[in-house]
Image (tube, rainbow, N blue to C red; front, top):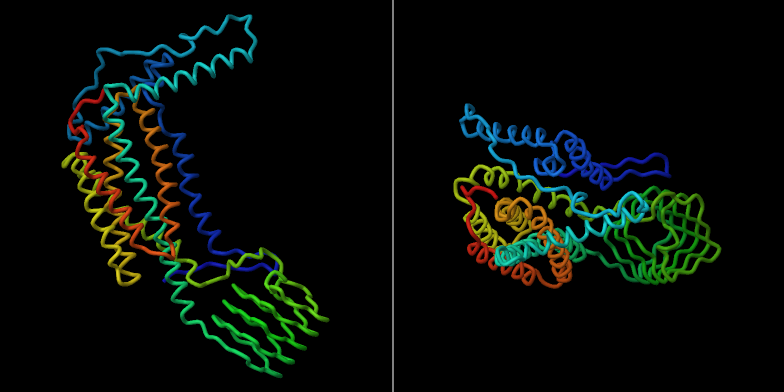
Length: 426
């Protein structure tokens, strides 16, 4: 059961569930900002800034924590050699004190750009070129399939639900209604060429209602709340709208003759109240995120036991199979269950890929390589989402085949990467 929270203060302010959703999503970001204040700086940063004691303390803390976790708390941390890197300012000629401050900043920024660009180029040195290209292919294929599929799927479910909802639409043609009071909900109906004389529409809801080429004469609308409701090519004669949200944009190519709008409902004119399974995007995203939790726990426990490559390739293969079976889902619940399975398994691939990326590069190239691959990941995600979204309402087979194929390629290429389990980091 899913509850959608909503309350209204007068007629001017409405609070709907999507705002609660956004507010809740903001909490982790705030918590992350607070947590960052408690995290220590990296030892390399301290070394580059001449703070050797601080770097030593951080390394000792990491060592002691790891040894306690491995069951060897008695082991003592010791450092025999510290290799430091000169600070950038020591390597750059700033021109002396006579140089203006803006020229100093320009020199600093220029050299910083050259340093970043130089770090980026080192990732493609002959020593790391093959690894970088392989990692680019794996990151791209995984991101393309994962983000494309997880964003496409809720929209596809919602589209199928709308199609099923539209198939139950009732159509009324050339009906004549006189001296009738409507005080109940009207939903999912189409009325064509109707004539309504001296009717009252009081304290009611209209959901997915369409009136086409109809005549309303001496009618009275009061306290109307509508969603996805339109009047097309209709004529209103001597009709009064009092405290309704039937704004004029809902009257498409319609004529108003001696008709009046009084005390229109205020607030946003978007149809937030549309309950035609609008929560499904949030619900499916929530289930997919929840399914990731056990995958994170299992991958954390088994990472060092089965190795990075086995976890990456194995998880990718199983994700590929679960993704492929999505095309055979014959019910909405079965497809959602398969998507959750896909998310729970594929997260192990991401965890293994993150660890592998960190361990394949030395410390002075690690952050550059990781940042570059993450940027490529975002590009692949945008590309996958754009391509997959274009097939919503057309077919579900093509996106699923794209995702399965990308995962298959990624799992094959992952096996070509070197294993880093048990190796000493550079």
